[in-house]
Length: 254
Image (cartoon, rainbow, N blue to C red; front, side, top):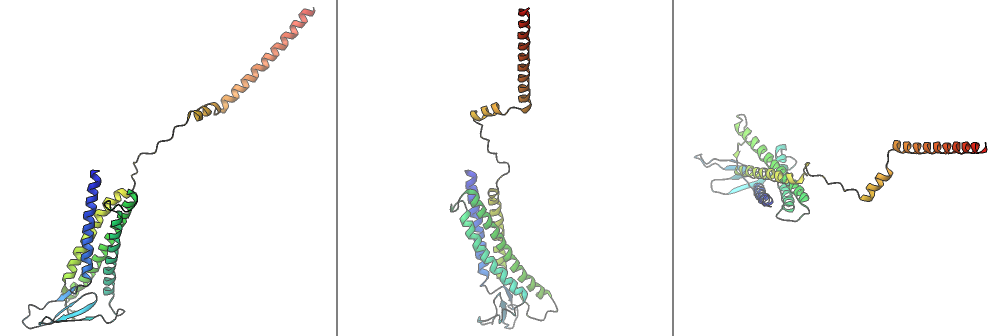
């Protein structure tokens, strides 16, 4: 009972960790500061540029900003479309992971047997881990391109630095992955039946069945010898009787 309560509290902690990570990942989608070009060290008033998955923005020294959405989805570069797909997939998978985990956790008691609930919880843990890896891939791809352009001396375009949304997203992805791993370990031990479980004992045979087997299930060789011996002795007795009768009749006649 104590072990079950401990596992239940650990599942609650993992669920809270994954839920917090999913909220952090969701908060990065509308955030503008995925990458930023900071000019605060410059003496002159130079506008700041920043962008995210959906738009490019510019802010002047007075604090006013102007944003412009990307003109065409089909004209976007491949890495930007991949980052969009991975970020949205992380949000969707995290939602379904939360639903599966709530159904299968021990504290909710929504599902059926313990093994069925453990398998549902294990599915939710796998979904959480996939969500975390999807978010981590999206932020890492964006950061890799930003750093490569910033370090490239031949790049003539606007150079950016890593924005706050990437660090928030990395933190949320790590929470999703760690919570999913621990939750999957806890539920996986219960979802897979043990191979060393005791076997079901066989039902003892009834007395009538055992008596029938002793009566009718005799070896074939024993039955043949018995029958053959009996017929042989009967034949010898009949012959001896015949000879005795014939001898007595002859002596009495003489």
